[in-house]
Image 1 (cartoon, rainbow, N blue to C red):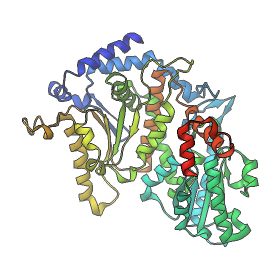
Image 2: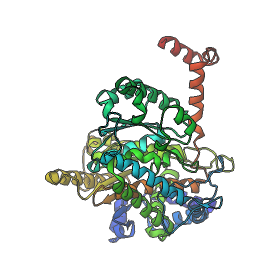
Image 3: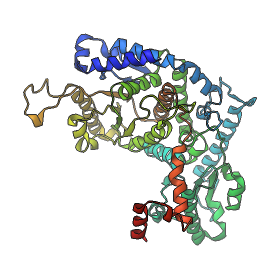
Image 4: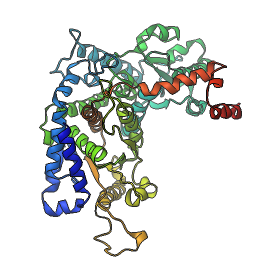
Length: 518
């Protein structure tokens, strides 16, 4: 593997001496060669400084990391989360009827389907009005209280799929800052609101603190019948029962599902309630489609593999330490934040699975905002900054507003123009610009294109990025599925809150800040 790594390092040095545009000039079929499609989703990575031999070497890198075997181990239920002794089976939450998944001698997809059926019955009951509030009237709003994986995925999906929301409007509370729960509840009628408390262990302090506030709000309005307004996503049925939640309204999930990978199952209950079981089924089908591509497609048509190889090229060999996610879709406004969690919590690691230091750079910094807003902000740095930031554009052929099709045409034009401008700079339009108007170009980008942002397409996109994270982590030799890095700060926060002597053991800076804030 070291020989391949060294070869790619030299290729990256050689690439600095050529332009991406020159690769198009040398190969009229470059777009066809460096793009791939699956089920209506197009990945174009032709605007990167990757030539055929480089792509071959990148594929060899994945093979040297034993990627096919690692991939099969994940899908089959092997214990690949070695630090926690767990399987990693978020893919089983969108089960393929033809592929049983055996864990400890049991086909877990049977239980997954039963859980989805339970969710669907509850969601449909709320939407049709057979499950009613304490006063016998239908619910109009649902508030999901969670944090991290119990919040960001569902919140992102509901915003992305807002054209499909009917009957019940979703809202999300995550931050321990009281402003979040106060602002969310202020616009709602407690008699018409269902609150879902999403915490696997039912011990997460942010979630339970916000839940206490929401329950007090419900009690004030509906009295002791507040339990009719509660549901939970949790495995701690003793705790949820003590909280006053009917066991029939508790939706659990197994420890082989990590939080940031969990919205395909019970954590996605708020999504299913908002868009309905049928559209949620389409969402799962889109992810399942991408699973199939990742498992079965040849390397040159394997979208997750190709996306990961481009990411490895930019991060490890070209030295580009961040990636900008730029959805040209206002409803994908939370996608960059969702991918920050998915990618940086998974692959922000410094040791390999056997406890040794990682040889190179691991997870890049992921950030972004929707276009065209970003064009009037940070695109200045993308075009003329001293750091090169690979850009990842997402664009639909059509929007959901037929009466505003002319605006979507403007949106598409901007997306296509920005990727072109990043590559060509001013060398064609203005060969002799003044220094401040010079754009050097040669800035890499990829584009993901699709017909329209539907539940199926969103499922494809999220699964695509999940598998990209897996491939990159596999090549680096790290465990992408634990998250011990989130614990130290939380532990110290509890000490500051509960131990009067804790501050005395901390730095003068922290003590001084505490004095100021007291």
